[in-house]
Amino acid sequence: MTDHVYALSINGKIVSSERTANALNPATEAVICTFPLASRQHLEDAVAGAKNAFPAWSAAPVQERQARVRELGELIEQQSDRFIKLLVTEQGKSRAAAEWEISGAIHWLREIAKQALPEEVSERAEGTVVTRHTALGVIGAITPWNFPLLLAIWKVAPALVAGNTVVLKPSPYTPLCTLLFGELAQAVLAPGVLNILSGENELGEWMTQHQDIAKISFTGSTATGRRVMQSASVNLKRLTLELGGNDPAIVLPDVDPKAVAKDLFWAAFANSGQFCVACKRLYIHESIYDELAAELVAYAKTVKLGSGLEAGVELGPLQNKMQFDKVCQLLEETRKEGFAFLAGGQPLPGTGYFIPVTFVDNPADDSKSVVEEAFGPVLPLLKYRDIEDVIRRANDTCYGLAASVWGKDIELAQSIARRLEVGTVWINQIHTFSPDVPFGGHKQSGLGIENSLHGLAEYTNLQTTFFKAMP
Ligand code: NAD
Image 1 (cartoon, rainbow, N blue to C red):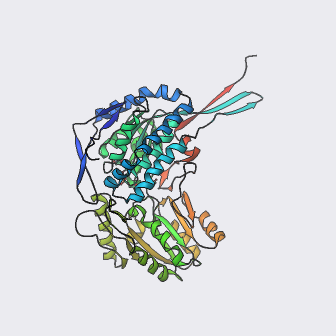
Image 2: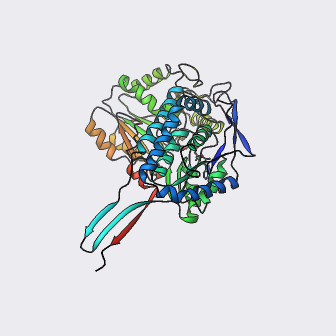
Image 3: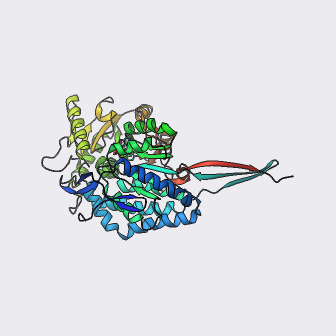
């Protein structure tokens, strides 16, 4: 696996770069291999290739584009074991989590390849009106390091089906699966249709400023999303921004703590908490707080933390040193604020960016662990008494990505769900997604939608034609 020389995909060619960086395994801090850092000229070549490829690709029948996108899924499927191992090595997640991501990528390519946006025609006294979706041009896609391949596919599949060409930049922390995908994709796509460039953050900035990129589809932090929005204004780029979250989960008093502890644990700690829609604030009714907290701590003891390549490991390290340091600092500040940990609270000594599952015992609403998105395995457990009050507290954030409500009284759960200021609410489940269900953030968790025909439409403009016969 590490013998492979990872390269850029530009205008149908596999291209190296004079500048390279090291890709690290976060479980061992060992260098996996080097990868190329794209230059400004590489970006110019990729955008020019994508621009040249656009007329033919956008004019092709949608069925042809769907067929190519389906084939991209087959390419990953044929080498799924290679992708899974590579993802575990570069991202740090467990093998089961990597299987989930890779099978998700295949599923999304297959399902988005069934989508299309038909023309709307209406006959009126004054003539005929036809409204159709037209492709935008070159899409700049920018992705984070937590689900590197799946989130890339969430952008590439609809962008291509809608008739656009793409320049995609993975995170410099996890470029390998995306570069491999780009290389394989050249076998089924015409030159320039899909270009993959790895590089540092500055490459993302160059993309957002580029005059020949029509839209940026970005997934990452809210802070970077704001910068993307600012520089995308140079040519009024279209934008889809999938940003950070601080998702609340509300546990109603009728819940059996034993029955729900495992689901709530994974709601918070899947992918070691590095999940935009992880439960990041767990509001527990005071009548069951102690019992549920004890169940969560007991379950945490059964979960093995380690390198995803080891058998039985369910939780991996933080993906990179920057995030590890950020979470360590959050633990330090929580301790200084005077709040107690029911489990965890200290990074593991030795190599690898390991932080054990950490529960903070009922911190104040303005404590850092409640206000900030930890993006790591740290969960504040918060007591509440009154439903009105917990809804207010859940909504008291600039974020609005997702939330969950847990309880036997479905009507009450639904009435709470309707009042939560978020894009997705799960009731008695969490983290279900589908290619045909819209996903997007409210408030400062984002702009626009991914998935479903709403998501597909975001890769298009609407064009309306009015016509009538000559008299
Ligand atoms: P990040 O914002 O640091 O980086 C994301 C991407 O943007 C990377 O590819 C990075 O190189 C690039 N980038 C950095 N600076 C840039 C700039 N000025 N202009 C353009 N691109 C730039 O985010 P991250 O640390 O990689 O990911 C973690 C964040 O992503 C968390 O806040 C998480 O909640 C969020 N996230 C959101 C979703 C969602 O769907 N809403 C999904 C996954 C992650």
